[in-house]
Length: 463
Length: 90
Image 1 (cartoon, rainbow over the protein chains, first blue to last red):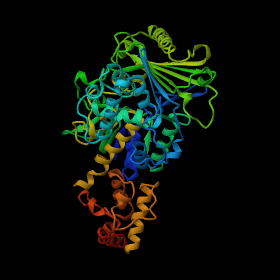
Image 2: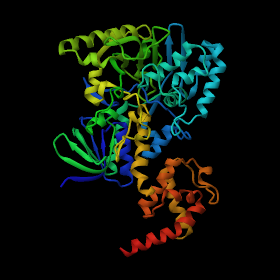
Image 3: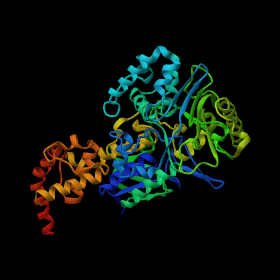
Image 4: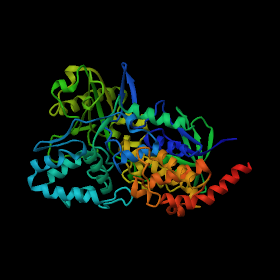
């Protein structure tokens, strides 16, 4: 007889782990399945030459001091019963947005940005203040406000297109699944998360957070199976009732929560989604480990959002990569209890998944070297060139992302159409994570929590 | 359970759900949410803990009865008596 669970959760990334913890906390029998040998999904880690390297993680957004009332970070730590101190968050120094004609700077707790906008765009100071007030009044999480696109929303307050571009740069790069724009409610969430709350990094990187989450799930009696892929979702009469694993065994469950993504989940259920549902935005990331901290090379910023042109493009490039804009992350410029002996410089640029996947092995390896070199050339106009000091270099391409996360199109931010509430169109099957519409590490955790609360815990109470 | 025991049971649960809140000066007649930071997610946890620890089932429509400590005592007294009887009969 097949094993029976209250819930099967697909994917041990942030949202899957959070959903699993919530369900296990209240005595649901939960099975969490992960295809890979490491948990974390898009925010994982790997070992290379004795070092632990984070994938994806530039920053934990939504930094909030301990006990901050109403902050998303406070809420999710409470829900998962993890102590704020255990994250050992190190705050950013400051971050910058650098375009040819202007530069903006921001620090945690919304320090720096208003002053920096007023200095670089004096005519926009009033508009910016009105924008900040409007953002404070909206309810993006529950009401999905504003309904208009992010660009249209910003345009109602700001007249200078350069300022709009500059504010959009970190926001689009940290979470838009749409080309050149972002849903309005996501813009508001990310504006708060990045600019008003801020950026931090758990001591030692993402591993610390993952250990806390996995430890919590196991302590609650949850079952985590690694190297266990789902081949098919079992759906009967429009309702999900379990999963078929790669090894051919079936698992029955009252409910299935999937963090695989909307399109990916539909395929598991044997349904072919529309072509426009697959995300188009993917990235190449160059990771350099330096023999000295970046501060010793005179680089103090934590994040640098750069563009070599005043109109920056956020779309799938025609070529393998588009190095005209990107994100530089100096991971060792987060505060840390142990002063860094090495530097970690990440450079991330937009990349075209289909072109990367069409390359043969030799061409692929050559393209990795060439494109990472081009990204470093571009970034070296805004941060020290890491190459003379590099002890270890690695490159992740859209193909890497696809292989390790299963995201079609290597689309780290998922489908351009989000399904708030986790609605999948199939009963007893719920989406969590990126395609539920909340982004970043904190967003993904909140997504897992809220969907599990509503669909896994409160359902019994409604009847 | 008597009044004091129920109040303490509810406070124990709130302390678990919101460990960073100070509950020593809670007034029983005032709304909990006006005295400490509790959002709807925390409230769900209180209800879930009541079920887990005391076998009491609070339907969503009755959440409003738990707004104050006094309300909790009034609402939970008969339910806890029933749940206690069930446990005793086992």
